[in-house]
Image (cartoon, rainbow, N blue to C red):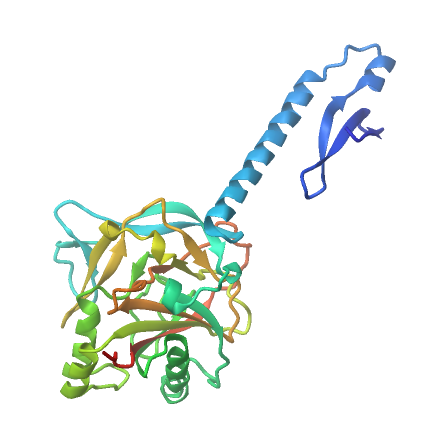
Length: 361
């Protein structure tokens, strides 16, 4: 005990001591209404007050120890709490959804929510890279003036992103085959038409499966992409016989930092292949597929708080090489401690194919 403070308005003495390395003051002697009780010839009733204060202090210590344990598990400070949406299997149905077609009753898109803590990815040491963790953050200013103009995006932004992905992955060649602008005010519209904004995807997933990753490259030869890219059969054969990966780049397109529905990324070393789920997307003219995920308490989540417009989150959604992390599961999320009135986020993501240099014998 280092001292006693007399609080005249409350008619009590409170002892205090220094707690821990932080030097914070903690009450050590509780609610001693001795002077008041003596003056009024009352029996001092300190037990209830002491018990209440001890209970509050215990809760504080438990919360602090829990936060410290969570920070230790992530290797960074905990920056957010969220209820993430994982996929859940329904007996008799496959996991997935119908897009632009009538529900045939064979697919079910059911989620299970689980509260998780997200570490501050800015504090990772060493910093995350696409090769080591499937995601990384880079500063990369853009010359695009209007992200609502698809033509300007194709003309200006695509080449910027191709050079960025080359630098991050060491690829010999990169081409953009798709982009999506997302707006937090777009409701639940996940699949927007060209020139429209889509909603953020609140579901843990990675964009391609082991079947649909290579198949996406093949479709760029068969029917091309909506961006105009079309591969020749020779180009497709060359890519599919080589090492390649599909890499996304996500950017905030507002002048203020992201404050709502940021993007969370999963540490790939915490994945268990048994938790992967094939997620089907049935369109009128084709069937797409990606990987969804069952919940696992071992999962370790991160995000980059308050991303600025000049920052790009680069993440690998599928990788052909099996000697390194191959999948970045990700999801938009709502921070449980988000401040009231946080502005809706607007973002753009591009999808690229990154072809690696040919291996030498």
